[in-house]
Image (cartoon, rainbow, N blue to C red; front, side, top):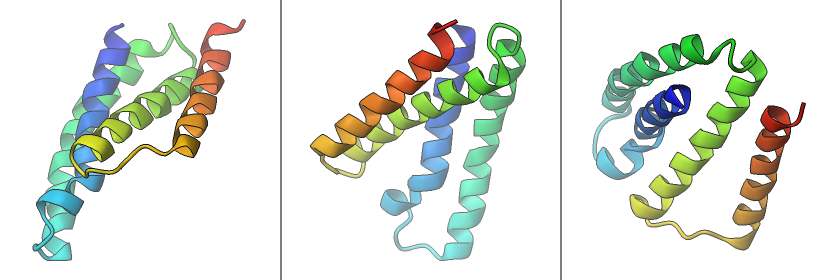
Length: 110
């Protein structure tokens, strides 16, 4: 569970670093946005590296990556809806569901 909590924290910072400027830094120069994103991404690594360190052994590296991608999508969808005001389309829901099935298949099926 610690691994997943760390991945959630990591992906919140990753989403802010990658997409936050679309909402919060619209009038800033690209160079400013790049450096600001790097500063935010530092905290992504502060959580991502321990998540992988603690999770490896309980999960394989492939399973960790798939879990990370699932968490990333969940965080991004929430960010897109809440912060960017985007709507969820049916095909996004289907694609997300298929991704969740893939993660479950990789992690739960032995």
